[in-house]
Each structure stands twice: as structure tokens, then as C-alpha cells.
Image 1 (spheres, rainbow, N blue to C red):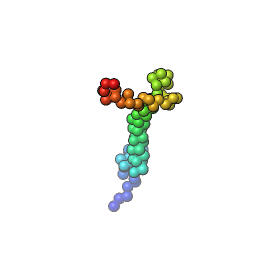
Image 2 (cartoon, helix red, strand yellow; image 1 turned 120 degrees about the horizontal axis):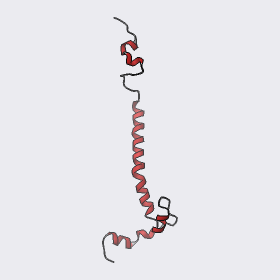
Image 3 (tube, rainbow, N blue to C red; image 1 turned 120 degrees about the vertical axis):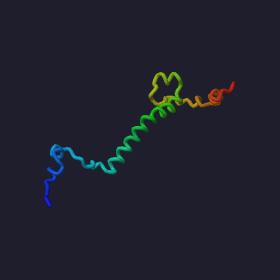
Length: 92
């Protein structure tokens, strides 16, 4: 049985830094990549929802003055009985 040098056995690619072996990422690396993708997806899809909810508590004037900030004066009247009827297409 002949003993062959490991670089010679793998070929010239191994000497140049290339390898056909499976990368050593492992379970932890894959899990971290999945969590990174999930967190990015949450930020991309969650931010518009949070912005919509916060904007619903602003008056029109405040919204156009500062659309991305927190409400200075919280307008709970936007969710009054009148807005419910207009959402249900009832006539007042």
C-alpha cells in the first residue's frame, strides 16, 4: 500500500487553496443565517405596520408636518363612533 501526500492526493486545487470538502459552517452558522434572514424580514415587513398604527393617532396637520415621528398629541378621536360608521358604509 502506497502512502501519498495529502496535497498530491487532492490535486493541484488543494495547493491553490481550493477544496472539495464540505465547508465547516455547521449547525450554529446555518441557524444564525436563518435568524438573520428572519430578523431582516421582520424589520422590512414590521416597520410599515408600526408606522401605520402610530400615524393613525396623529391629526392630518401633524402627520404632514412630521410623518415618521411619534405623535406629539395622541388623537384617540380617530377611532370614535363616527369613523366606525364610515368604515361600515353606514349613513349618519
